[in-house]
Length: 127
Image (cartoon, rainbow, N blue to C red; front, side):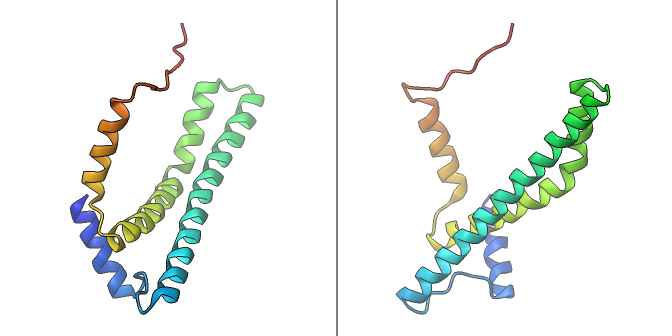
């Protein structure tokens, strides 16, 4: 993750896409703009999932099994879904770099916190 964050920082500087820091108003505007761009990319992930579910339902209605239909649908969105995840990761690393947050460290600390919660969500297991 550290290599990814460093790559992201250098890439964004080369493209002049880093968060602007001239003054408070410009920084605030840049942060909000990048946040909106991130949420747009998250919405594009939802759109790819919607495509997969619609495709799955069409194939099921045409007589295919659910499992087979969903596998075909997942495969059909895989490339575009990967691009959308990458877009999200680019914005997330941009924010982390701006706030000088080590994403790898933060990730593991958060996972440890979740694992040790007393009010954990419980998964439903089909029998």
